[in-house]
Image (tube, rainbow, N blue to C red; front, side, top):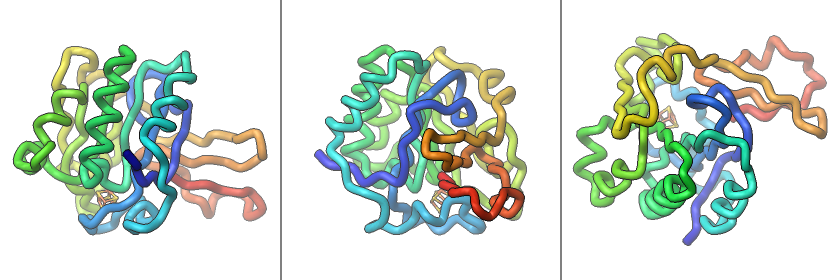
Length: 195
Ligand code: SF4
């Protein structure tokens, strides 16, 4: 099975509780007003990978608490998301997922309820620039956090940093988080990868 991805980070502290790997899915048709990750919208962008190769990479990252699935829209690749979330939980790790759909809409999707059984916490709802209010993992105040297990609690999310800059071995900087550092504030010669 294949999955189209936008980016992958083995270690992040701004995309969920504790140290986590993050997988950004590529492709989203929701067109949220003021989408904060437009580069992840194109359905033919990013790169196609085998789900098994992603799982193999995740299995080698020993020190993480869990994995966060972001995007793009993870639920628009439901078969891959189900396989990934089920396998990550089987490894004993926590699963956090973002979606531009509300929980009610997800439950009506063919694989929605099955996927949610393998997600510990869901950040749900379309991003709306008109009610932008970055805090924890919430980007706009209409979005909701749903816990489907006791693994995480609201406090775990309210204390998260909302931005992060990771310097890579090649000198490039990955900017991430719900309220990333504006790129114009960085040196123009810096190679920037914004997720
Ligand atoms: S769900 Fe995310 S990627 Fe899709 S349009 Fe909304 S903000 Fe952008």
